[in-house]
Image 1 (cartoon, rainbow, N blue to C red):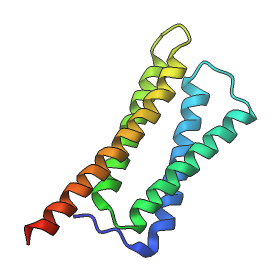
Image 2 (cartoon, rainbow, N blue to C red):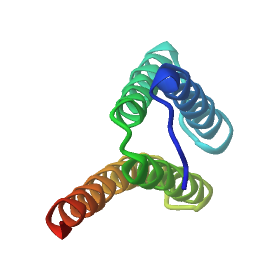
Image 3 (cartoon, rainbow, N blue to C red):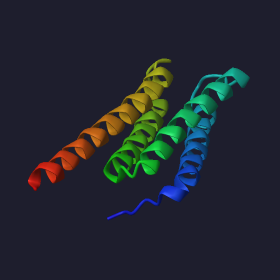
Length: 127
């Protein structure tokens, strides 16, 4: 099983934030049909920092299952976002892509926290 060290939580959070910013910026610049300005980059940066802080908090509290589920949700969200950007939906692909990203990120986080809670309760009441 993956062992997350508490002392490296900020490194993992920073890496997740940077990778999220890069993937989101590439998606918006290359695949999206919308013009990108400085406000868009600021919004992408804020979203990336939030994603990184959540990942760092999961690592800090050693919620391994929740962190893995959160990462899978991010990966699925980015893949669906890129797919929506590439599909021809007469201008709605950009909005649907960003909504897919946010939805799958939240689904991954909530599912991971629920599974983590279930395993904690199982171990606690098993005794």
